[in-house]
Image (cartoon, rainbow, N blue to C red):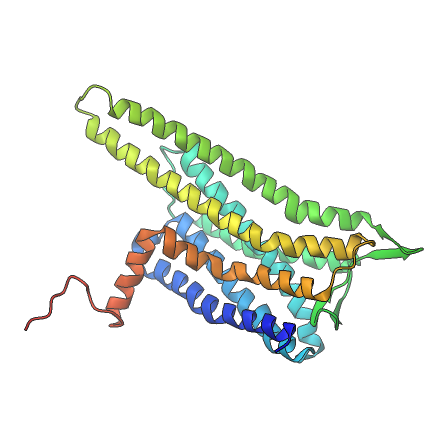
Length: 322
């Protein structure tokens, strides 16, 4: 088995884990009424994005990489890299939205924000799915490259607007704007929001702990409940940070090798490095169900409850009568 076949095996594993895992997240959030709040709806929408990325991109790459040739014609050669860019942008917008949601709940409006699903917020989620189409479509009209099969990388990809003169690479202004708009700016926003959330949550918890540990009065129970709520909010903020960090860890190697291959003429990036880092990028599609299973007790209990409903597992509290 050669290196491309090993990479294809990893891509196949992502489908086997990610497809049922993300569907499970979506179904649990739909069925459980306690999850019908904005932060969980955003997580379900993010799971749908990962599910579609596996279906529309990853699934087509498995057999092609294994056989070391593109098998699905020119139309899919066009659509495959188009969907990569669409779902990358879609995921980044979801991460910004989740971070902003935590910012509203903990920093900006901690006393009034209830996370209820409103028409305005439904439109907000719809825009997360619509907006990514715009820069990709504009990019094609602006001549930011065309879709073509790259036999070295065994995938279809979008070429870049690069001029080679005397062995050097000249970057156009368009290509400088792209990483700033799609990588640097959104993650700076995410960083600022999450740092603010974490600082505010810690400050509120410390202040309330001091009050609870002070003289006992009639409001002590209410204060304890507020501390418990703040602890849950901080844990939710940490969960968001872990989700974002996992995405960055998966994406950055792919981004670095792409930048080196395109813009650093002195570095010859081997095809194996591109295949490996692209494979790591797709690992992000299975991270979130794993994180939810480990970090969210309410998600685990909801999954068990759903399985008991359909008879997959037996209630652990039910004793057999002998």
